[in-house]
Image 1 (cartoon, rainbow, N blue to C red):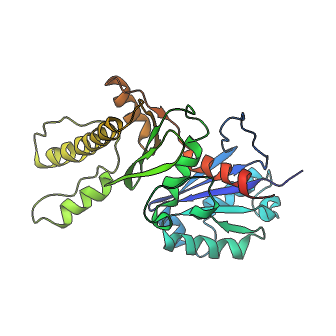
Image 2: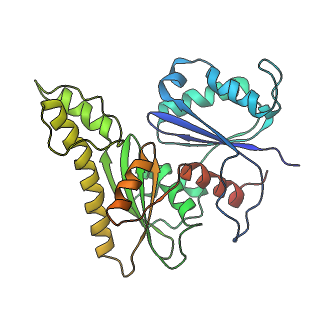
Image 3: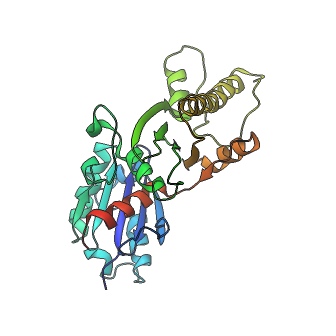
Length: 281
């Protein structure tokens, strides 16, 4: 029996870890989902010289072993997809100190994906893995639009033939809030960090006005991009949404007559598709 493997999505503010069984996917198989997953704060990884305690405990629980015991997952392969070089270096160093299994860093050349962009090596691997995952679940003759609500917000297009066409990158809510506070003299720092509960569109205070602008500006930007992509397509695209606050945004779009498929583990699932396609375990 093959060992399980660990998939890791390294973002700018968090790291998502998932455990998968090593199985070969067939065309009719559903999109693979992690058996278990864990979300780590980026600061916790940077603050630890070894694997963060939360990750160590998770690995021990997943291996059904008490904390402090030899870990049967220590030989499991790790597959890393990263958009943050500093976090990647820190995690790789910690893994080498603790785990004995091989460590693979994925790049665009590992992906079963046609890229119609100018510089494929400069596209965030998370955006490409979303496309890999969605290509297994979208209707084979329809294009798709992928929306990822992370530290940055990305809105990307997959053509009807499955090619990644590129897209747009917007500042995330937390990033925009920080820029407003740092680049002005009197505007306060908003604690709004993601697209969670919608604030009133008309703010009755400076802070409320900032949060209205941050929230509805992001929603408006996403809607405008969807409209502009759709206007160039012969078919109505399917919409897929992932990221921390994606469930609330999916509801918002559904109420406005734009059904969106929300899937929380799309990047991890994309890694699993790549592992099944291009690696032997």
